Image 1: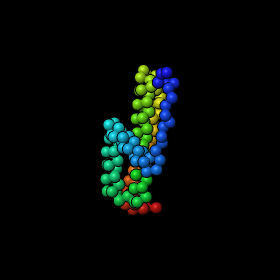
Image 2: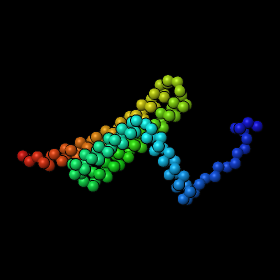
Image 3: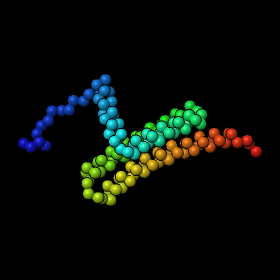
Length: 137
């Protein structure tokens, strides 16, 4: 019998607090892997700069919540994009249109989230300076 036809014992699923700890460990491993990507580190740096800017602009609590959600979305999409890239490189190391499309789509998802962050920041800046300008209407 080869390794594929041999009977294997059933996988025992973790439950309760053990499952929580295992999932936290997997998440920590993912964060460590994501940190190896320069794009991820750049996005964390950009998020820190945005946080300073929002503080300087006196952003409301609602803006801080929205900015935090959008920032986490960028990080999540960057992690998924990295996962797609690794899978494509593993499954199809040769250049292929399908692999390129998969990578491009992942990159586009990250780009859209970055644009959403930019739009929120532009809104905050416009709102802040619009309120400082006297109204002529």
